[in-house]
Length: 394
Ligand code: ADP
Ligand code: MG
Image 1: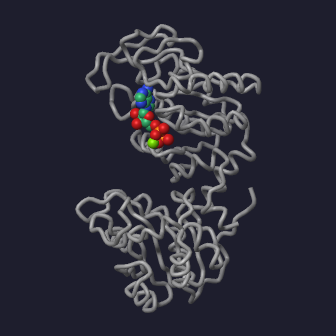
Image 2 (image 1 turned 60 degrees about the horizontal axis):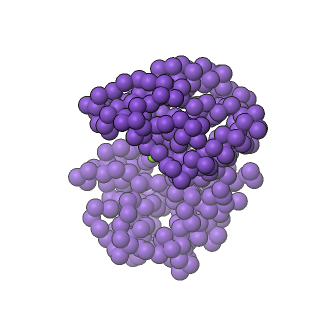
Image 3 (image 1 turned 180 degrees about the vertical axis):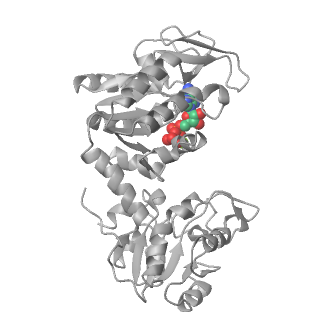
């Protein structure tokens, strides 16, 4: 992957630096309930503040209609939270490219910050509208993109505006691209990829790409049943995608041809309904009862997966092994999380919203080498798709 220029070493003193951040945080009653994404942008923000920049932050929040202000989606609480986290004055502008934004930016002293109102209050943001890009570009002298989570979208603030100003990557975005890109380009081997989650159809691109790169692929989660079907097993009432069985079979074959070990569950935890209080049992993967559904991997599978994970020098994990949100079906995901955390010889990289949530739930985040903040963007990067927000910086 061609390198992207980071903001490091760029002279920003006295300059207006327009930074796309991902402050798409959960808010309840006007208070940020999880500030992970704001904290993730702090290295870049603090670097700019220290460098004497006039820092202009822009982000989206949620899915407003794009017809103007909606109280529910205001970024004011995020600005307030940032003010508590950073050692610099933080102002808030009630619009994005309007009079208030212009006035607040003009009033900035070096090392001060203004957060603009939600970009998506204006429908031209998502349309990457050229006029809107121009208006955004007028707000800064330099552009920085640190919003990795939206880098897979070609919007005005992530793609269009980058062409109009000297454009650089922030530290968060650069770290994501370097870690995920490096994992694919030059992994320490064995490279073990663990894939789970709900559907094969969501992850085909990722599985396909990893068959080309990894030495071992571990399959769990709802998607494993489509693979088990491809092997000719019955899977009861488990989540299955009949339309993808053939494709799953092709992937198993491709892996075999390339000498990639593809591990499927040999035992599963089955339940009579999709509920916390279901009746459960453990059974072999080739003899699942026709009236029960698989909601987790079984203990024999856990042990086999843990052993394979222990051998990796690069371990990438996306997708829970079972319905980890329910206590009764969290065990497989927890066992895999623990196995990944225990492998101190490997670079351990976690991607995907629910996988990261699982790692946090089991309090293992600090044991991992890298936790991707990207969700969809991480998956598209792993698939080998060009990310518009990253390409715009090349
Ligand atoms: P990520 O966000 O990490 O990419 P996904 O969104 O693909 O992961 O999948 C996460 C979801 O998969 C979880 O909500 C989990 O409950 C579900 N899941 C895992 N195993 C099963 C299963 N056996 N049956 C149904 N859903 C499952
Ligand atoms: Mg998910």
